[in-house]
Length: 411
Image (cartoon, rainbow, N blue to C red):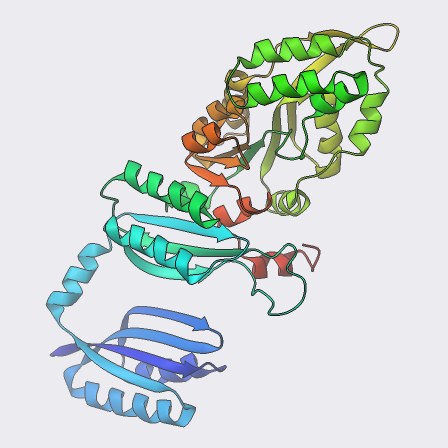
């Protein structure tokens, strides 16, 4: 029996039952559905169905589909597909796939044009585009509004380093963030996420807060800034700063903990991660006291940070207890936790802002520089600089509509 391949393209106002009625017609003639795709943009349907049908039935199929389309008020177009074109299309399906996530406070045509041009220059084909965030309001306050678009790409970049550099340049020039990830099982099955604490989960450095209470704020802030930029060794800077805290009454730590400034989006992010079973760790060059305070707030699974030594008089001695949690130690701890939880490192995520976070960002399958120092952004494959910490969710593929539904409106 001779067969034909026909691509049916249906566009128009979407309504319940439209797809079902079309498929019912195809089923009468035992059509094989070789491919299908559907999108709905502002209640406008775009439905494509590639069918294989016997030559003697193809005319009947097209006639009934056309009549049904007319009754439903939609437009239909038929395109014959040759066996050679179909075979070539099947061959392209084996190519690698990537997910390019673009996010910001708002996304405009100029940003989308720039991204599409880079994608085309690298030889990618865009298979699909979908919006992960809710629709922006036309009127009213725009506080907390964010936009995220996800591109599904097929192919292999001509120059991965050039592609990464171009995306970074766009991010800084056009006020958006870009994440390029290979679309594999590891991306879809992330299970462990490790956070820096200071300037990541909270918008301050707790050692700076302690220093202000001790009257040495300016001195400590300068050392902290140099350490986060990678200008001086973290251990050296940490030791210097601890010495400057000598004599501070330990009671001030509780007051600081109770007034920690939580980063935008952190509560939303933690709620979702816990709900979906992620293991969460804080790996901090800060202090255990504050990490444990956040652990109680969010139900964190692991906290590793530094311990300040307290004298018998209830004041800080200027020393610390145990090994310093520096960049090398953070990477070690990430590997250790992954081993304990039986998680492949490709399933691990690390988020941080300072130079001492780079080792763990490199170790994790997905390393994200969050509102980070220039050196960190330059060395990280992914970064978020335009929105809050819940931007991590979009890099993981979560959609606002699904999250809001699952959270019962609490997000």
